[in-house]
Image (tube, rainbow, N blue to C red):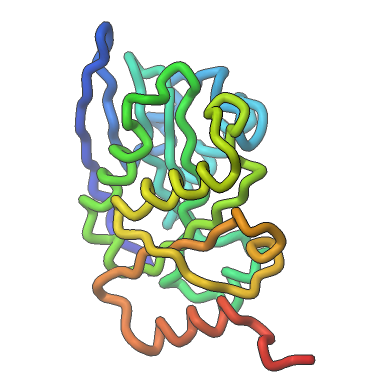
Length: 210
């Protein structure tokens, strides 16, 4: 399943700068930008920036960024689930993953994560997919947030709900391994009953096996 990548853009002002929120951004454009050193939630900044460039080159990959004068201070990633994860079982083309949401520490409080998620919903492509997001507490910046894991969990749920994501139950061991971990998904308007059934089968994989 492949849909044309339509570009969208919004702006928000800080006291001293204009922040551009845009996407999907192609790999050639990304290479002209710089990447903030505070974006360290998943891997080293240079490695994560390279990962964004590579994902942008995928037919289904979509990168939305927040930047100040072409300096990236936040991003979100959409792509098909990792082949090693259960969410890729059956290789269903209608399942996508919100692979990461990250905003640099100095820019938190500007609402950039919510604005990037909002921008992602402007594209009709999103209605053709079940988009999952797996929220694991070990990716959260609990130290700088001042929140405990359950407060942060509620923060993430509220953030995702603004873009139409809902909490879904699953027996996936990585989710059930800690009560703060959460599976959420946004069900596109064009998803049919058969596709929902397939999604349910993945969520509760092997539930009848002893």
